[in-house]
Length: 131
Image 1 (tube, one colour):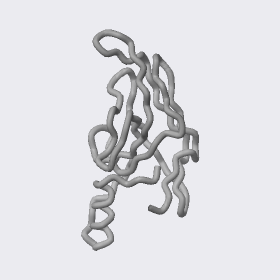
Image 2 (tube, one colour):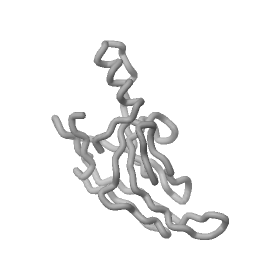
Image 3 (cartoon, one colour):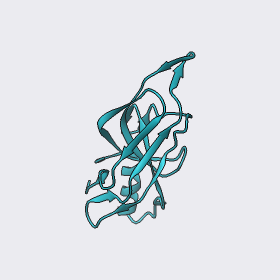
């Protein structure tokens, strides 16, 4: 996930200029159907989905320390008809809901949600390198 959002670029620029930005103390991973420098699009709502807290480890390259699991309790519907939700991107946020997007990237493989199930990110699979 090597691409910073506009929010994160501005936050880091202020830090480099000793302007004391408020750095996040906790970060959360979200899934969606797309992403840009402004953040994630198509983040699921309901059916058990929730952003997941991520703890990173490393001295240069940062890696998620633990397995991350997104649980879906039911299929998604449009006008009462079950539909497939094709998740293609992920994004780090500084809050469990709402908040500010920090960095985003594409999933290695899209996840098609057709009903109850889990999307799993293996430990050490999510990496942040020097940007």
